[in-house]
Structures are given as structure tokens and as C-alpha cells.
Image (cartoon, rainbow, N blue to C red; front, top):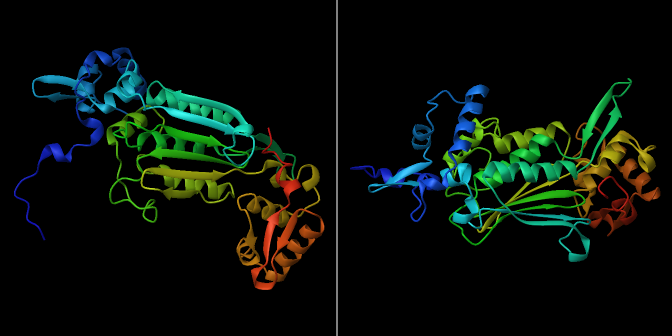
Length: 348
């Protein structure tokens, strides 16, 4: 075990609390700071000083570089007058596609360089995703009570935007954050990959915020429900909504999160899905998240019932044209029929 003789406080500082040479504290909009403090106090998420200068110092939004007081990444990102004048790639690129791939002829909307503060970006991206995904109503089983249905839980959309913005590597000056909305899923891509000592396998059990000052300010602003619980909240909300588990991928240069939406017409049994059983609709919703699947994976959706019952569902769905198959015996794979894939609430 290595015995430490001293601690270097500079090495203990997070990147977002380091001074930005070449920047000036005049680049921070003090009106934004005052408004943030007032609202954070009102929400009960902050109980400190209401002096904006003191607040900025205590929250690592400004720091000394020798005799000079300079703004930090956190200060510019959260309260900057024009953050992109200092950090041109601290932006979000948003792409919306009619299909399931980033094909130029399927573009519905492209919006590059969404800027402003982190909260500005969050609100803009959230508003677009919520407006351009599907929402509906169904009746509770055995009653006339109306239940709201959403293609994606709003908390999941927000948490993953926050995760993308608050945990990205802002020292990567060449890449923007990216969000892609497809017919069947949303992808969030954060430059920089996962922080040191964090792996995809340990993601839900490890806390290592790359930009803790930014995250704390977002919490005070009401954009985060609990610091360090964002991805756990996402997983729990998707499970509660009986949706597929999110997919996490760290490529080293970027961190990707993919969430497949709930096909509202399938889940509610609307239109051509009206005569399907609940279990058959669940199988279809699962197949929407897959290119193909063997029978054993589909059987896992129903651990409490006999495999022959699920096999009967699959056979009927093939006969009705909802599913197709390829291969034989142990190599048999099920596929969502192409006409079903293009006839759903995912189409705009």
C-alpha cells in the first residue's frame, strides 16, 4: 500500500471547476445567477448564500489563476452569456429520421449546434423529443378509467439528456453531443466515453461524475431528481413501463445510450392488433427492439408459464402474418414482418 506524504489539491479538483485562461468573469450573466439562486431557494434544493459572487466561488463557477479570478467550465456552461463563444462544441446536434437508420432520404428534421447554457440545451432537446414522440390513452382492464400512454416516459427522456450533457468530456473540443430520434428508438451520444474507472458493467453501481459542479447546479435547478441516481432511475422507469432495458455502449471516444420506444398501438391493442392476446402483443413489442430473436429469448418474457403456450402464440402470429421465420430447428429465428414494422405508432 502506497503511503501518501501530501495531497495536491489541484489534482483533486474536477475539470469543470478549473479556471479558463483567456476567458473573463464578464462572460458570466449575473442575472442568470441571481435567478437560479432565487429559484433554488424556493424549491428547497439550496440553502446557502443569496450573494451571487459568493455563490459562484462556492460552487466552483469561478476560480483564481494566480491573482486573476476567471470563470470555470461550470460557470460558462451554466451561466454564460454566450457559452459557445468560449466552447464552440459545447452544443447538441439533433437528428430525426423516418426510419431506423441515419439515411439522408429519411431525414425529417436536422438541427445542428443547439447552443446556450446547459439548461437551454436540455429544455430545447426535451421539448422536441416529447413533441415528436407518441402519446395516447387506453382504458384500464375491466374499467372505464382512462390511462395515459407514452412512447417514452418523460423522466427517461430528461434523465438521459442530463446524463449526456452533465457527464460529457468538455475538453474534447472537436465533437458535439448528439441525439437521434428514429422510428423505434432514441439514441443519446456523449463525447468522451465513460470516466476513468467506470465500465458499462459497473455503470449502475459506480458514482464518478466527470463534471460534479455542473451536476450540482442542475440538481438545484430542478433538472435532476437525485445526484448519482440518473441511470438507475432510467432503468427503473423503463421496467415499470414494461419496456426494454436501455442499451449502454462505451466506444472509448463516446458513450451511447439507446432506448426503444413502446409501440402504443401494439400495447393498447389498437387497429390490426385488437384481436391479439396480451402475451402476443408483448411479444410484438419485444420484437420491435430486435432484428431477430430465437424462441428461447422470447420464452424468457414469460418465465412463469409453459414454453408450449408461448410456442402456440408464436405459431399463431406467424400464421396471421405478424412474424416471419428463418432457419430451422435450433437455428430458427423469428422476425417482425416488414409490413408490421412499417405500420405502427412509430410512423409520423
